[in-house]
Length: 307
Figure 1 (spheres, one colour):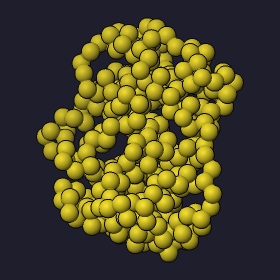
Figure 2 (cartoon, rainbow, N blue to C red):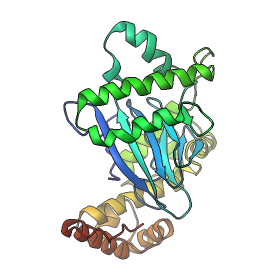
Figure 3 (tube, one colour):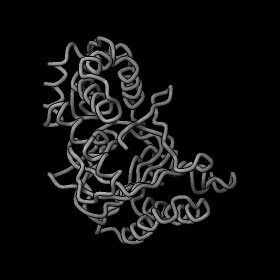
């Protein structure tokens, strides 16, 4: 969990439950400062999240969507999105990521049911909450998915039911009739995000990031603030720190080595930035996750994950 693998075009490579069927279902959780929070990404798959307890949020193309217990969000294909923890408590959820081709049984189905949603730039996301009549229906289906996560037939059957709800909700909002509006900055942001992913180990300037997106530095700043609510340089620092966290959890490399391979000029600066973002030192973080891993291996259900 928390490790996002990218393809050459910068999109996420989803870790499907079964190599032969493009679906990922997980009973997840989030709280502030875990490594899978605030990591912008996109993929061809559609994504749905139903909150079981607590509160969380999603950013979709720069718009923050707050989700309470019982709410569901549908994120359309190829949208820039990431999850956000709210408050200090842990929120739990069911996440369902699936490639829309699962529904594509014929050209007729594709034209009638898929393209009106997938090809509609008015529909970057849909939020189902207590005021929507379809909220309970989609929530009830989502909560059954973990029990069938390795059953392609049942997943497909439930996905058709979910898709029908998505179409009904879209029609009720009038989204299938409106003329599409194109987000002209999406492509530039995806390009710059991918540039950072490929070059974070090296020295990167604001000019380098802007040049990779073929835009000015001022527009680069505006686009990053729109999509992630921060500057390009702070996004780069956050990306490097999250890479540090991944290495602390998955390797035994010394801090000096980790600092070098994540683009930091020295261990002290890396530790300073790490504590600023995660609230603990790199050593404390590594120790906490080592304790958690040991507890999981021994079946100690009283252990809690470090943030």
